[in-house]
Image (cartoon, rainbow, N blue to C red):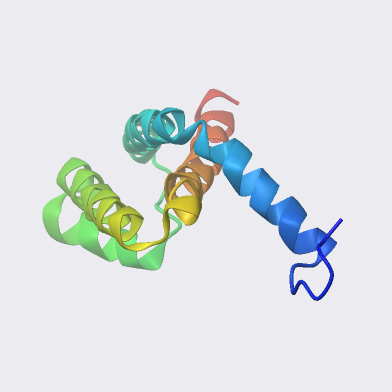
Length: 119
C-alpha cells in the first residue's frame, strides 16, 4: 500500500519490486548475453553454409560486404559495446534490463536458427 499523498501506484511499486528482483541476476544476464552471442553467430553461420539467408536486411548487406563471421561478430560486438555503455548511464535499478534486452532477441534468434538447421 502506498503512503498517503504518494505518487507511486500499485503497478509502479510492483514494477520496482520486479526490477529489484532482476537486479540480483545482472551478472547472470550478462553471461546469458555471451552465450546467446556465441549461439546466434554459430547457428547463423551454419545456416548460411546450408544455404539459408540472413533475415535482417542490414546484417545481410554487411555479410555480403565482409563475409559472414566478421559481419556477425562485428555487429554483435557493437551491440554489446553499446549495451555496456548504456548500462553505465542508466539508473542502477534499470541496469539489468540492458543485458535482458540484448539476450532476449539473440536467444529467440538462436532457437529459431536451431529449429531451421536441425529441423
